[in-house]
Every structure is written in structure tokens, then in C-alpha cells.
Amino acid sequence: MTEKSSVVDLRSDTVTQPSRGMREAMMSAPLGDDVFSADPSVNALQEKIAALLGFEAALFVPTGTQSNLCGILSHCGRGDEYIVGQQAHCYRWEGGGAAVFGSVQPQPLDHAPDGTLPLAQIEASIKPDDAHFARTRLLALENTLGGKLLPFDYVQAATALARRKGVQSHLDGARLFNAATAQAALTDSSDVRAEARRIAQCFDSVSVCFSKGLGAPIGSALVGSRDFIARAHRIRKMAGGGMRQAGLLAAAAAYALDQHVDRLADDHALAVRLAHGLQGIEGLTVETPHTNIVFVDLTGAAQSRSAELLAQLNAQGILATGLYRLRFVTHLDVDAAGVDRAVAAIRAFFKA
Ligand SMILES: *Cc1c(COP(=O)(O)O)cnc(C)c1O
Image 1 (tube, rainbow, N blue to C red):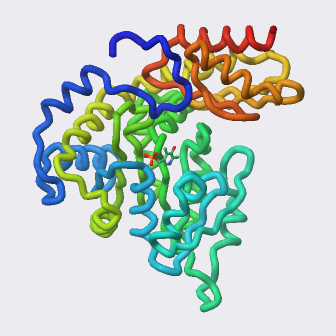
Image 2 (tube, protein in one colour; image 1 turned 45 degrees about the horizontal axis):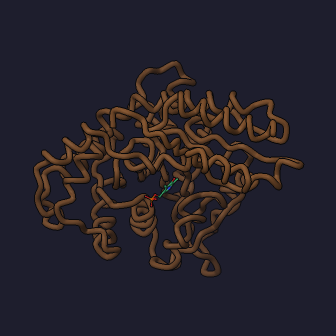
Image 3 (tube, protein in one colour; image 1 turned 45 degrees about the vertical axis):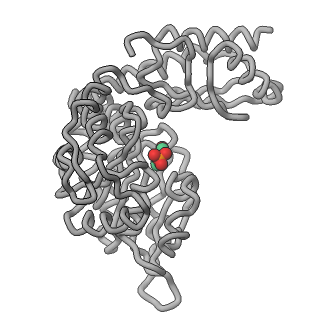
């Protein structure tokens, strides 16, 4: 799309439409049957993302949920346990899939306000080798978590702790490139890919989504060692994720990696623009975002008006989600004019 649509859709970065260039890349992709490992576009994407993040191998999967599932089940067997945050997508928002399909027991921990799982809590929750306990096999972190960048020294320390204890580590990096973009800005680096690799290299496996801020219609990838990916490949088949001419989708993902990584900083700037625009309205508490997600808490009398606010915005073609905590997500189909329209509409609502 060359023109932003008149609807300002701030519900999620998953709502993007494939751009013209992306559609052209999809239509011209060479295809084969990926269940025979014979789709050249899938193979190329897998090699590309593995190399980009510094891993031996990668697996293209339809969704981030399936990617995390293949990852957790590839690390853990029945009766094993993984340490995970209460707010983590793979624990809270994926239907308990690791427990349902893999008999893998989660050990959820509370997050500190910055989104981290405190190291002392991680260490205390790693069980000794004793028949009473599930075997602690895996630490799963998420970055970004609710749009927050985990401090890099924390990521290093937590994964080093896991390694020291013989525990594997998995990153749900659905928005890894948003994290890398924010981290690059903090470190005055202009190389988002290098930052993504630096984060990813702390872990034994990483899942990344192409269908969030990167703007592809469908698809995620899991990266890890060759053995790990071979196990994940079996699990993907069992989960029904063996797709045939999937190169059509892989081509969109490859296009996104080439064209849409360096523009994520624009989404982050728009999120800050939105947050700043909303600051100072009575009854709203607005955090300045690290990346592309703005949370707005409604307090006091404003709380009872959230449904009314969302309905009024909706009537003006401005879409968002939430209840007492509204969520606005910027992405490649939102521009500054759209953000300004949203700010003006919200300001007008609270003046009335
Ligand atoms: C969206 C998301 C997923 C899952 O992706 P789907 O493709 O919707 O299954 C996993 N983890 C995080 C952090 C996400 O934001």
C-alpha cells in the first residue's frame, strides 16, 4: 500500500497488509514441497534467519505459538519443567500448549516491574536432581515483553545462570527486532541486526515472528542447533505445521527481513509521539514506550469511561484494545497523521 488507509488501526502490529513489494516477492517466489524440504524459498529463508542470528539451523513455522511449542517440546520431555514469567506469551497466552501437548510443567515466576524475572527467584526455582521434583530443563524469557526491552546485562546474567546450572534457555523473540532497534538506540549503534544477534546469541534457541512489526502476513521462525531443529522439525509435523508450497509465505518473510527491519525505529518514534500526545490528560497514566506498544492506564473517574472511549474512537475509525489499561500499537500501516488523529480524538473525548 502506498497510501495509509483512513482507518487508524492501533490494535496490534499484526493487522498490517502486505505491501506491493512484498506481494511481488511472494508472487515471484520459486516454490516446492517443503514437507520434502524441497521449497527453495523456505530453505533460503531458514538459512537467512539462522545466519542473521548466528545459529546452525532454522525452521519456518506458521505461527509464533507453534514456534514456541516446537521450541519448548524440543528442549523438554514429559515430566520436565520450564521456568517462565507469569506474563509470558508462551505461558499465559498459548492455551497451555506445552503442558497439553508435551506434559511439560511450567514453573511461572512473577516479573519485576521492568519485566525481568529476578535472578534469585530463577535460581531458587531450579530444582535439585531428586525424584520428588520435575526436572528443570529450560528457562524461557521474552524480549520485548509487553513492549519493554529487557536490559541486555540482565539477559546475559539470566542466561549465564541457566547455563551454569545446566538449564537450557529459549527466547520468545516475537518482537526481537523491536528489542534490537531499542537496544541499538540505547547503545548508539546503527546496526539493528548486530543487536538482534547479540541478544539471540545469549540463548540456545530463539523464536521470531515475521507477522508482527516486520509486516509479513504469516510466519515465524525457530532457530537453534542442528540437533535441536531436527527435533523441532518432527514436532512441527506432529503439530500439523508441515506446509507444502510455503515458499509463498517464506518469500514475504525474507522480504520483511530485507526491507522492514530498519524502519522499526519509525514505529518506535510514532509510539513516543502518541505517548507524549496523551501525557497530561487527567485520569490517564501514560508510560513512555521503549518500542511500538503504548499502554495507557485509566485511573479514577476515567476508568468507568473506557468502553465509551473505545466505542467513540471506533466510530471515528480509530481502533484500539483494552479495558482499564488501553493498548495502542504502532506499525507500518500507521503514520504520524493517524497518530495525531488518535491523540486529538482522545483529547476531545476527555474535554467533553
Ligand atoms: C504474537 C506473539 C506470539 C505468538 O504469535 P502467533 O503468531 O500469534 O501465534 C508469541 N509470543 C509473543 C511475545 C507474541 O507477541
